[in-house]
Amino acid sequence: MLTVDFDRFPVAPGDRVLDLGCGAGRHAFEMYRRGADVVGLDYSFDDVRAVGGMLAAMAAEEQVPPAASAGAVRGDAFGLPFADGTFDRVVAAEILEHLPADEKAMAELVRVLRPGGLAAVTVPAALPERVCWGLSSGYHSVEGGHVRIYRRDELLGRLTATGLEYVGGHRAHALHAPYWWLRCLVGVHDDDHPATKLYHRLLVWDMMKRPRLTRWTEQALNPVLGKSVVLYLRKPPAAAGLVPEPTEAPATAATLRKLEETGRGVG
Image 1 (cartoon, rainbow, N blue to C red):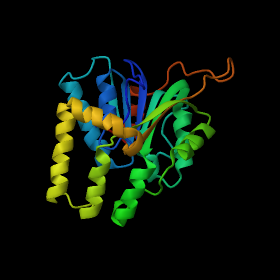
Image 2: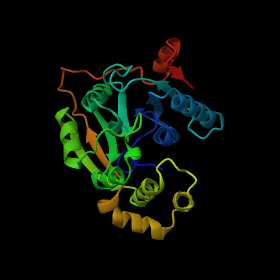
Image 3: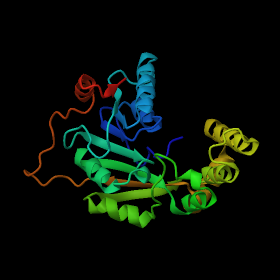
């Protein structure tokens, strides 16, 4: 399930991209398929190991262009292990709501993005999220859970305060909002309840088959019920002669080798 719309956030072969807080790797995998040089970063060692394994399997099974490269590393969003201006694209999908010091992570995102590069930032939308918080304290009051609810204008204001320029946005996953409300009602950690299992099967069927009726329904509902807010932003080009772009940024292969030497790279 992709939250970022890659028609609005173009990723081309050879682009250096970071999936910040990659989790299970859904966006990293898609950008790798598109031929980018991908680094997936997460604080969870288990997620990094799983994503690194999947990236390696994709390459072994020739699911990606031969020139593309990818790997996964364990790292801290408050101190990214990359040089300034390393990446052409940065995706931060459903991560900022987990971070107490979100502005530090935003500053790091901007630092590692090259001048002229694009960022895609997604967080849970305020209305669906407030319903979840109201229905279940267990939805958010767990270790590593959500620590805040963003209003769209608040998030956009924080991101533009770092120097990024807003270029567009949308809402996504309206059909997923009722699923999470249902989980909050029956027990957010209960994966075996018949109602949630049935709804989950519906969502999987929709993702696999993509029938027109559900696509049109979700598109119509997204502006109101979309579970995620998605913002696309650009880092302004550097002033001529003041901040040169890196000619050989250590984005993927070299970066991963350095991180592997320190024990943080996996994959």
